[in-house]
Length: 274
Image (tube, rainbow, N blue to C red; front, side):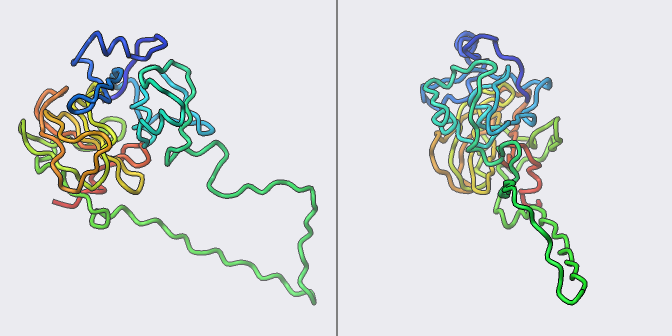
């Protein structure tokens, strides 16, 4: 499920999406008739969404990109990305085009570390010598505090489908987990959030829903038969958002992803134990 090459024209994939039709899968067409179809992206092994990098808060468009896939990679709503770059038509991107992604949770400008940078004022600073020849007291380093591992109970995620795991997460190979399903099975929201995408534009995902949650997290639900929620709609945890299917898949299943700051992470770190 990785992006491949786009047609190398000033309009990335726009004409291709119109010509090939449903088989090309438009990424930001709404589940019913939103009327805003997106160009196609092939998610083939030659290119991985894990490699999306911004320099000084700017991302350079590459072959295989769409506005929607870029937004997904940086954990953004595609509408926010379009507004911040004054893009009236999301299909009109060209290879080499620069996009500001400074609103992305993980997009840090080069040289920035989250701390203030002290400028050189030209003033020489002389260390203070303790009175009476006393030796300066050496500072004791603070003990290292390791961040806790993700706790599923605290995050409150639930399983989007009860099916058995037929393929697990593996970085660079499978960006989520695949759950066995029957066509028409209910697919539920793993956590409360807002629908930032409902459509079928990424080849390899089929009919796809993406929800945005707190803590810079996204969840994705792929290969559905029917999409039941629209973009911008709030959803509650456990709400039925789709019916399982096998769109763009060799068998009925649900592909489920969790993304932190746009990057795929292991869903098992967030889901409760069965």
